[in-house]
Image (cartoon, rainbow, N blue to C red; front, side, top):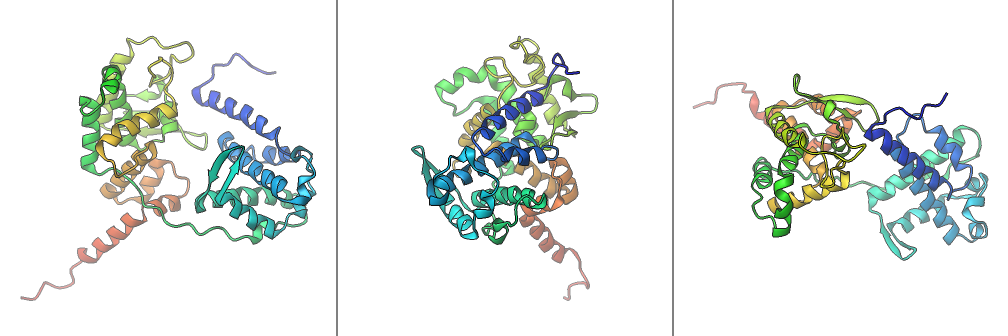
Length: 355
């Protein structure tokens, strides 16, 4: 029996929107694609499936627009057999096309990471039908992944963290227009940024927090991780004080209906959005540094760097950041590991220095 009156959380609402969005995307794809997405439903998030659907749509759109064989048939009418007609050359030309193209008057560009993701989406797509013996070959497997260049991890230095939080507190160097909203939002912004800098949580995890998720007895906050599972992250005294100050103000605000449980509220007294958090981070960070492009994810990198430098425990950093594979963490903080290894060379003395 279906239940429709059960109270839903923020994450449930986002998931429902994503499911509807995916259905809209599937309506633009060949019908056999539905089987693939149903097959991956149990081990992927709705957000991941949407990303795959976009990539696969770009691929079919490319085939339709650029290949005479496929141009004759509308994309929706493509049959599964079409996958066996695609060659390795088609895939390589598609990747080259993804570097830069114009579609419906809009420009699109992909660096090596963007192309690698598109190729990974196609590999998964082809592997599903090959594994289920529905196609005979997988030309995508013959195409080499683009070489990924290591990206420098951008993070705030300790003095920049202090300046950032001081800026939020004082409003110094904000424009007149920004100062109009600063007094009302100051405590919220301090609490939000202090929480992100003090725990390393993702922006999506942050905006999804409800008031009842915060436990001041144990100084922990319950969040919904990227994979859909729940976890408790613990915070220190600075985060605790910032949250308590904000919650005192928050208790005098009447939220819009269905947003009563949200911890962080927008100017419209609704649950704050990911985009709004991105904008407020950009606003304050641009005052602190113009050389670094600071985003909510860079605040996460800042926390991970600080934690690793303080503890030297890569497994702890992986656990707190919610990385399923410690190698993901190690890859991000490889430079710091190299720094620690250099320190190790000086840490052990074999003989007293000769006079």
